[in-house]
Length: 381
Image (tube, rainbow, N blue to C red; front, side):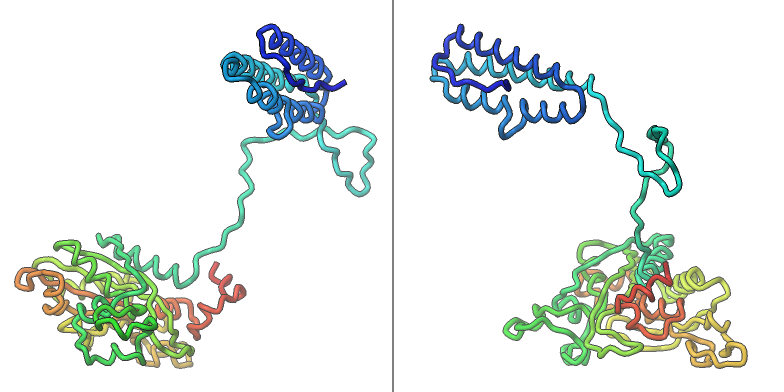
């Protein structure tokens, strides 16, 4: 008959000794009957199970029911029994016979001869869960960032939800600049009651990170800023309300436009090949002066404007592709970050990672990057 924990009418030393002897005798008898792994699991659950195990019952019926003057002695006996029971349960496992799972018969193979389980080869590699590859836009961003990291630039990031101050005012955008209009910028709802500089919006470029970095760092500063940006553009083959940028900033003493041209020329050759040429033409950006747009010789047609007998569409037969905007940091910007424009100078640049990915992978619709079509994306795996 299975052992049952009795309720103690007395908590004297003699009564405790007698109850402990009966428990130990039952424990020894039941452990001797353990032959298989199933027997051992049942034996383990019966004696040390948390809900209905024997140890749980003696804790409830002996220790908790004991009067205050006897709790100390009863507690010591219960702890001794717990140690003994646990040790016996673990020891009883050593004599257990483990029955291997039955082998699955193959078609055309008789199972008259027992099949022994194959030895485990611990030198074999484990089974790895297959992982996807990088998204083509993210891969392009990482390639751009790695080029500038090799030039000594550090990577900085900032919030996607920005204030008007960091997105426009501190970057020398005047209050009446068209970029502040809701036709171009996605503002957070119910911001009309706030002062204009405190209104929240989805950043239209990663340039606010340049201001935030210069606020907390003194020159020299060399940073590259990858990130997601938003503009109120209707989606089509070449536009998306959400896209990605990689911007850069370098500020130090005696930085000139020559440093800008040399840095970007090296970067483009690292990205598109050493045969690529660069060209700059004047442009305008509120936060740089002078400003320029940089073009690279078409790395698809080699600058010829033709692909065999067909015209080269990416460069529109010109042999050049506009790739980024750049310029020397406007001295007015330094006033927002407490830099002395008489002592320092710098340059900034920014490029669209999506546009470069389109050119690099020959994609004709930017929406394909964001539709989540696995059939399209797995081509770049």
